Length: 457
Image 1 (spheres, one colour):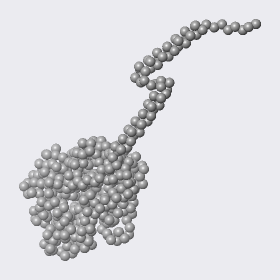
Image 2 (cartoon, one colour):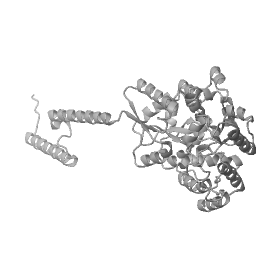
Image 3 (cartoon, one colour):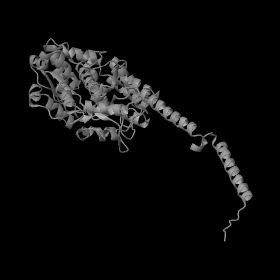
Image 4 (cartoon, helix red, strand yellow):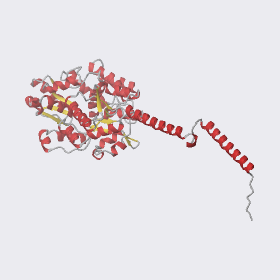
């Protein structure tokens, strides 16, 4: 018995042709819908291989382009590059960074302190962002509000100095995010030439009346040209404003309050500026003096007193070592003893091109050795906690006084008017426009401050 299989070859062939046609039509539709000639290996193995190689090459090219486009230059503007020993300290940190990170170079830009705020804010607003830079404390609120600063919390988390930052870092914290690292928070107080006081036979003053009398006596009974020198060049608005803060806050007032209330013509401000003007009117202080000239006069032993910060001590130490042994730092003789503390912070702009490298730069700057150098070589309070050596304290016996003043009488942090921190630049300009009339003697204190009260409102 034979086995016979029945089949329908013509039917099989017809079915196969229908399937093949359907598949071919499906592939055609796939190509039409995707816009690609090759959608799978079967569409052309050689072509697909070429396509894959081309894609890899394109990825490599574009990746390489990105790497090449990344600028290996760290842009770092500052007002401090040309500031003698302070500039040298920063240049030393720059050298350390470039040695540790040879793939990067640091491009420095010197900007005058009086022009710094306006220049930096203009650059940042225009999208011309540096990678890392110092800013005055008063600049931070406006920069944060404008969204121009990078939060530094992730950066700080990978540094070795985050747990050593001074409590003043809180000034740069907004909505739980940290936007700056303290550079220095050094207070302004009374710096004096003890040699001139000894020659005049007078003691350190503790009240404003004593201060006036002592300054006048030193000028009269010694070779010093001036009893007290301060900045009165109204063209430098920030420095002029700081001088008024020394006296306004020193008498228990300010130009405004946190709630926005204008307090320009308070009795305290009238008394404060009346005393200040008396030094000018009586010839105890020089007229039209820039802060640079005033400091140079002190360095030359021609001035008995200045309301200044520890940077002046550094200048004396480096430029007149003989005088340094006779210079002291003590509490201001104003009623509140308020020590105006401006300080500065390091920041990284949100548009910086090298944020990781900028964070590495902050690590170099804030190392324990670098911070001790800031304290002991520059004689300024650093931004982190650092223990001074005994030898340093023996050589600089006034430093504990500075630390005590900083702890007990800090005031005017950041040189910013309360309630008007974002509008600080315009606010300060209005104040100095009116105070300049007092210094020039063209208006009385009362008249100028009454007009200032109206102008600020």
